[in-house]
Image (tube, rainbow, N blue to C red):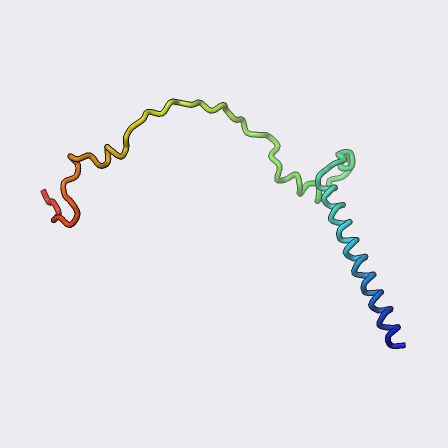
Length: 99
């Protein structure tokens, strides 16, 4: 009799867990479809919190974007300007120049 009771309890627990998981998945899909507003006439007669929460993050007016203007960049040799021979006054391990 004890083994039969364990089998019944196991089946009952398994059924409750499977039903709970199924209900949770169905609730998630219902919440997602409600927030996506696939049927706008559903929200015409009430202001639900789920619907308004999804709409708060959306921008109502898109910012105006302008076409980029491109200007031709002038080429300058930065390496030559930084390390020209006339600018180097001392070498490594040389005493500092104070004048």
